[in-house]
Amino acid sequence: MIYTSEAIESVIESLSALPTIGRKTAQRLTLHLLRQPKEDVEKLANALLTMKEKVRYCSQCCNLTESDPCNVCTSAKRNRSLICVVEDPSDLFAIERTNEYFGLYHVLHGALNPLDGIGPNELKIKELLLRLDEGHTGESAQEIILAMNPNVEGEVTTQYLVKLLKPLGVKVSRLARGIPMGSDLEFADEATVSRALQGRVEA
Image 1 (cartoon, rainbow, N blue to C red):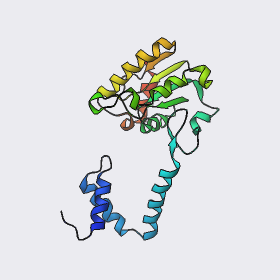
Image 2: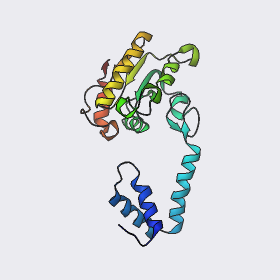
Image 3: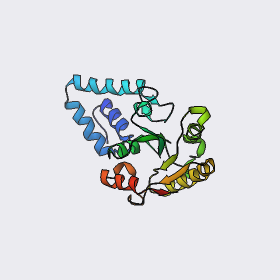
């Protein structure tokens, strides 16, 4: 489609490159932004730039944060004997919404997928193993909860981590099957995630 403005086309192209946003949605968002006051658009642009400049990985759990270590890792209220391993920050947010889990986290930033060239070196697996080295970090995790998404990639990642973690003498559990196979953790409702956490089984 040919627009009367290259600027409009540029914004549509940029927005449509985002996950889950198709070209029609990108077009609606672009037209919406055009109708907003300049101050609001500048506020959005500045917020995006600030986020990009300030947000980084937590050196302990690899979650996204502005302070390092992050607020979860430094909280005195957290049970430091539990580490819940998730694929993405969005999965961490889903678990936090349940208000049922009070341990620590570790974010892998993906799942094993050899077809897409994602192997162990592309994930934050080495960082997880370093956390379990008590002499290296001072942490003493007694249980690792594997909260991978219930799909093929998540299952492959779970099995790989079980083989790595079991010899270390730490208890390894996984979420119960309250989450349907093929769905993503971030889209599950709080009650389902809560039941999955409570009903976790040893891996």
